[in-house]
Length: 255
Ligand code: PEP
Image (cartoon, rainbow, N blue to C red; front, side, top):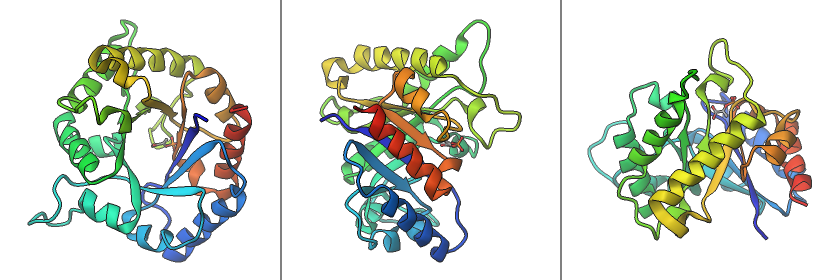
């Protein structure tokens, strides 16, 4: 069965380990019957080790960034190998909030390559900051994908998940606007075309997700009509019942 994917990006939340354990355990309890969904939670790195010890076969862990390299003189950084050893199996790379801090496509490309070597599945975030009448935003996303995936071997490409996150729809963007399943659908089709032009049939199994203020209210529409294989939720993933609700909607929509 081809499973859909629901990822929770906790960003820099919550404040304490106790809260993190409560949130994680709450989700684990509520999704214990999930069968058709790969559920991935990406907490702050400081909680990974402890959350990995909470017993659940339904949730996998991911990180929110990974430095390229295994060990070395890189003050403040954490490598993909270290994250793998802590229990992470996925890593979000190129999130718009990190791009805002200066991360370029070239840096993201290095991180993707290294994460694959470390045994992590990269979740590459792409998405335009705003939309323009000339549809230049398609070229912007194309360029992000081409530069971030430059030099990735055809053998590795199916490990990469692409998350389309229009920055203008993300909950942390001031004056954000709602994206529609149609916005997601047209970009998902476009992304699949770019991937197929670049990687041929090896790209056929790649998963594409939508992210941008997804909630339990619109998850069903995005899963049905958004042309994607799953969702990446930020704010909604900080509420165990909302996030679990999204997973349950995904289970139903996979029938
Ligand atoms: C995100 O920033 O990855 C995200 C999906 O956030 P939100 O759902 O809060 O818009």
